[in-house]
Length: 147
Image 1 (spheres, helix red, strand yellow):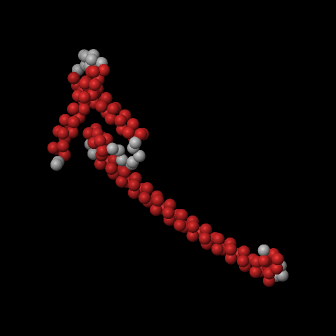
Image 2 (cartoon, rainbow, N blue to C red):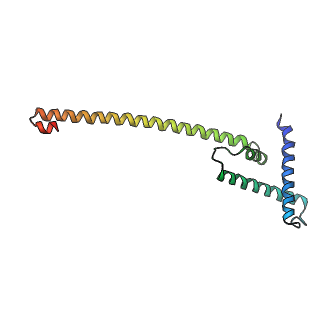
Image 3 (cartoon, rainbow, N blue to C red):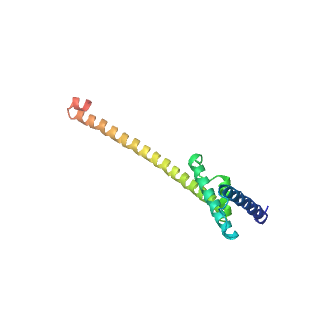
């Protein structure tokens, strides 16, 4: 399906959402939109819808969302507000994943390097102590060399 055939469905869904919000607001306050021109009312409803969407997204993220990507419903709404936003969010998540993997690889390599360096220095310290003890024994300090 092309993007052109999806566009009317998205606009239809958004119009339905705006109508639901309008009904709920009018139920709360029947005089809310009295005297407000239709274009202005539609603009207010769109802002209200966006605010609700952001609020729900934040609430979902705080309570249950522990993933790098937003929920699919949120991606769809982002796409309605900003064209290609879902693709951009996916690209950001992929870039972040690549960055995290590169950092993990670097951290692992650094840990291996530190481990090898520690073993090398431990070997040098041990050999130095043994050679020092042997030198002490050869110089007549048996107790010091044995210690």
